[in-house]
Length: 401
Image (cartoon, rainbow, N blue to C red; front, side, top):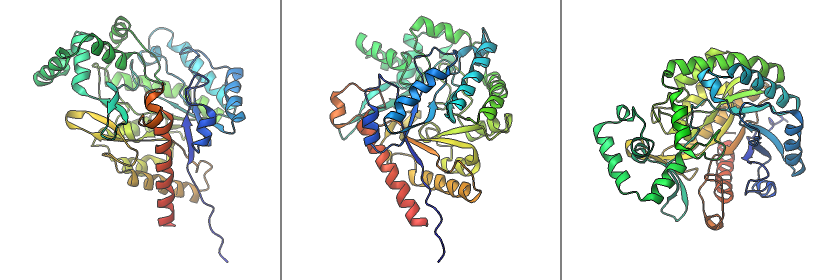
């Protein structure tokens, strides 16, 4: 009798922000996750993660019956992005952290290279038709902040006359509470963001990028990769860069991880298996010109981590986060492409067939509406997302086997 090929699956993971996270490890295990995505957020940017600190976090996760599958993330210090200050010291520290992670058995490291602001939204409690709430990015709201709250000197160069008029109308209807809420949403730092700022701190950060365009930032990224990838190869740690979120310029800042062409240039800059990608469907999917299944088919050999979420593309570049199987993105086609990549890896006898997947973000719903939760990281919304993705994965596999 012919022996059936062993069933392969994605590794179901869940982001946990550490002991202060409102969602406990016990709850995460009940949601069905076997792997944890975590980071040592209490260590200041640029400092080395030492082995005792890494082992302490790993032990807490393992005692809860799961494994620490992915680090998300080790922040890239702003000095590295601008090639100023102590950037050479921070590069050495980053390499040391990679080495220590490998020593402790943590083999996948997600990071990003977004300047100043990490992922950002203008609304953290956007009301959805079913009564749940989600995250939203509205361009006119962001422009109102940029033009009339931050008062960035060159902001008007980045907006058309019509966009400026819409931003002014939006700003004029805000009271003091609305201004403070919009400001905090954008610059205070969302969960996992590298840093939060006040307005004066943000202005000083932006000044450092006055003479840094896309090409300069891209070259700084390539220099960063040339410095750290050898350490990753030696430690057996897979590096995977996260796309820009949103995938276009904000505050006049360059963005260099927004398209398939950007990713190809990153792969080419340091041609190593250990220089890979975090495939984030929500970030890349905001741009309708990104072919998400195509990116997986073309570049999947170095996709080391999956963030799956859906978004609704609205008019004028606005978007909000949808249910995982709803929205503007074809999650069936995305998942099918992932499974085809898994089968390719299995056929080549690769050791990385079980790609870590986490349900990225989730709506605030049911009992969580009355609880304090990290924006995008409530328990029930992500549980629903993980369950839907798990079912989609199983259905596709059963239909093609």
